[in-house]
Image (cartoon, rainbow, N blue to C red; front, side, top):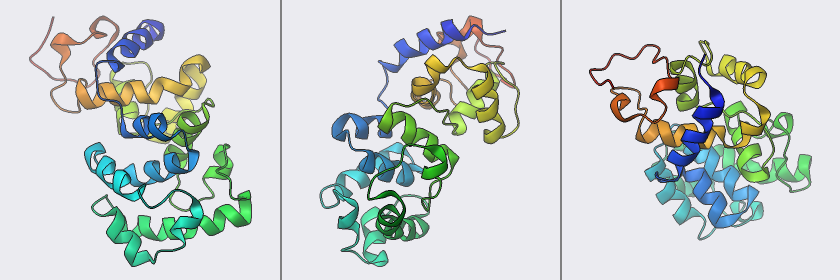
Amino acid sequence: MPDIDKIYKALEQEFKKFKAPIIDIVEAQTKDPFKILIATILSARTKDETTSEVVKRLFEIIHKPKDIEKYTIEEIEELIYPVGFFHNKAKHLKELPKVLKDKFNNQIPEDIDDLVQLLGVGRKTANLVRTIAFKKPAICVDTHVHRISNRLGYIKTKSPYETEMALREKLPEKYWINYNSYIVAFGQNHCTPRNPKCGSCPIYDECKRVGVKTKYDK
């Protein structure tokens, strides 16, 4: 069984070498739950490079929920293009100020069950906002977390939801807040979907390499 303590400590060190995921960058620059929420919504199925360019442009004019009300859906589409699914995301952003006002007193909620009431916010986004914006324990499962947690042999699941539930049971809570950030950075830069860099992997001895077929070895 992989030693999660060793894995976490190693990935914590690796994280310092890589460019941080875009949501971590937004948090570091703004400390604003609203902007973290917006960036997280926009980042879904979008490369970090694209999200970074869009949020930089967007946050020059959007600072609070009420600022969104000044723009039509079509104008929001232009502002957030070319993020993935920008048509749907523009509609969700347009509705966001009203929902925040009607249900949450213009505050970004911290709880998962509240966050998922916002249009465009699923469990992945809700968990990420909770951990990054509020530093509250949650398990955000994206494609990297699902893939690598299974590749390690730490869990055995078939879907992101199953992965979230399995990690909630197994992963020590002290690791929850940063687990996504560390795994995402590692997955983007080292443990890639195809041809992972196993030959130079800092957690090679703790990884079962489930499903990995590569010529690299130690």
